[in-house]
Length: 492
Image (tube, rainbow, N blue to C red; front, top):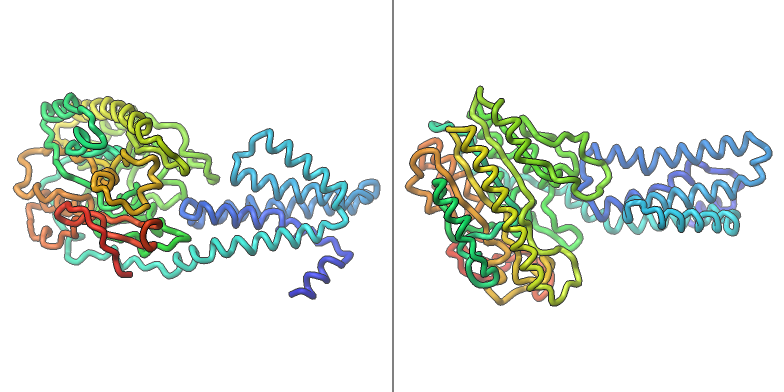
């Protein structure tokens, strides 16, 4: 290897393809390393190979061809090649990290010019250094790739024949998920201490049953929803410190899952209405019959979650058209959300609580609007208002939730979740079983099929956390099936 590197460095050949490859390889691998779960699809990979690899190679090859052809420019060939290499290398890193701000671009071009004037004779050494940087990225990416390759979806298999369940009742189902909305039993006391009486009264007047003590099984949007739609526990898929997100979670939510399969088998049209394209970042195959966000609106390169969609308007457009068959609507609103995700936050518990409660009031207004739209347009509606996890009120930042906690109020603040249902007809006798999302659809489908045999395979109503500080890294049971705070490690 050393001899090959020295041969390359000392060679008189130009190697424009290698120099072009070096320009984009590290920026691409770095981007994949820090955003793997948002990029792990063939469509994303193809885009990044084009943008980070092929375009730099073609650019350097073209410059080299022109410089060798035009004699007046040939004298400055290495300076120009060095300038282009550094500009591409740094520019692609800026695209990956700092959103290509003008002030950083000016600094980059100045640096590239200095390198071109001072270091052009050492361009091949610069290229070797760029390849060394790319190799260091492999230490970050390789564990994630190995985990992806070894991933097993056996946990998704159902223990019974629920995939063949036949519905007797076929109302239009509106599954409305508001991000981080705490359950009423925690909102009015303790860390939240918020008087939500007006909204609770509104729900009662509209015929909703507000289920107390409902909580999520997992602490994040992706981990909670992947379990919800699978109707099974994943226990974070045996995470490690290098990658703790659920493998293929967006595909499990958007592309194919047990809930979607069952609904389609019962002749439901499935509709996905999102206010942000968070679930679509890595462009999973669309398993829903309709989505209000086109992939043309989703950038290949992550630049935040985009502008808020007007879900009220989007629902109005589709609700009047969907009358030929029963419909399922998964409507996600990232409100009130939760306290900040920022690290290094101290003494912000009070201010973060105030911000959260302000957004909770906004969520209440929005929920009333969307419920009224449904009531005015659909007499066959079963409306579900729910949340994916709690608001994390009491912490300075959500990051602190992964530090072992002894205060049960903080533990429950992570998971406490809204659940209110307006049944289309009489509610089931077994609705007391609504405790956590992992069993929600199994219970709902037992009601719609009027067959209680599917209740024999309910998952344990426990809540789980990934701990990386205050205890050995791993997955722990944080709340048991009876709602007690515990701290039991899971064996892998």
